[in-house]
Length: 598
Image (cartoon, rainbow, N blue to C red; front, side):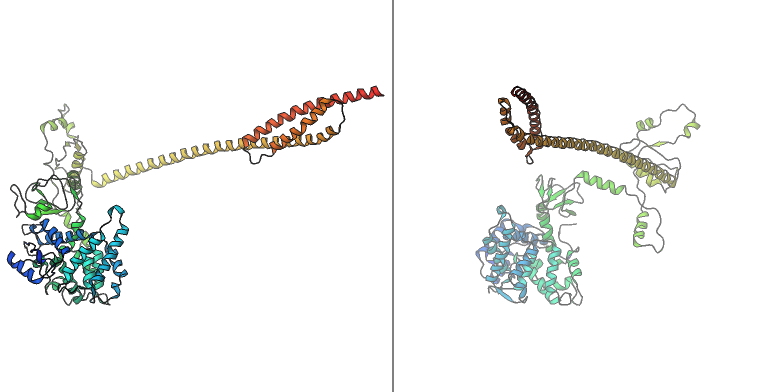
């Protein structure tokens, strides 16, 4: 919740303004104390000169009018978020930053040793060049510009004496704080830098961490609110306390956060809601939709503001900055909100009292059961027409009509039963109303246990029917699978028979070829004057070559081999018939010639 002061308890409210151009580089004199003249004089005395790069950051920051934000926490977070995006360090994850520390040898140096600005530039070069390797070519950044701007900002925040040197501890804390990544991962890494060998926090190192972290807020001119003081470490942890990593992380993740570092978790929340879209109209600037945080007044009806209007105090109508506002980091449609409300309202509350010595969970149940029952009788009032439809004139006697259970509208209460089941019947009627039913019969005095028994019986019957249906489905599936297996078996059997027939035909043809080759020499040795026999003998070698070609087809397709075999078989049959006829003729002529010569 936020009021006109805008800050949680413990954080003073200031209205800062950025100092003139010559107050940009100093980490300790960047805040505003008193009037504008006093601020300018103090800043000019603290920092005599500034770099061109740092001056460009200040000039661009001034154009965003961050100083008009009423709340110091949001003002500091907005400025540091601007520095993150301007230097592109918001694209570098905490783990990539830690790896860059290791690659540049910072882990081997004592934490309070100083390094030159040239080594800082080498570290930033590693960080941003590795970033470009991970980014898509269309999303790559200008590494030289990012290195120059971030180096100028770090020197302006920590090099107050203009020596060109920074401590290793300051570099690690600053880059780990403003880089991207989860806050819990950052806090764990920071704790590893301030812990002693036993795993407990070193309070002196924690004070150094706090001073270096608050130097970032001081560098963006928020020193009056978030400047380092000697009492700041004691606001987080007592001096004599033992702090482990879990307590350290929980302290800075809890609500409320220690006032000196309230801007740190807000910086991460601001980054996470930067692209959250709210399709509602801002009642301050009248914009139809916006991104970021959304604020809703708890007093005015449906009065909502965007983050820019709320932070800068813009109002309209009867709304006042004194009204209590609630911050939203996401948007839920009215339909989802109504469904969530109905889900909560329809939850059954326990009625049994908690026994002595019960657990805390039982105690919470007992406390919730003492709440009054919901009264929804005013949701749907009973109209005369509805009652007339539900209770038409009955010509039967009143005694017979009394035996019929009365019907009630959703929301109407019955006083016939006790208060134990009133809430359940009320919820049932309300559910009937939501489902579109116009009437709900009141139970005829049956107890809750009897109704539960009937429900269990019905559930058992339905489960039995379901099991029977599953068995029937399995039987049908097995029949289908069996019929498919039989069909495939018949196909395979027919295939085998055809293959056997084909092999038999091939064997028969081989026998015929063998017999033909045995007959060829006898025909060649036969001396016959008949020219037809000699001509036939000349044709048989060609037939033998055709047969050999047909049977030498192991690499040919089965269809082609079958056609060749059939053709060869036909040729063999025709030629054998012709050969037998010619042999008979030649034998007859030989016998006739022999008789004539004798």
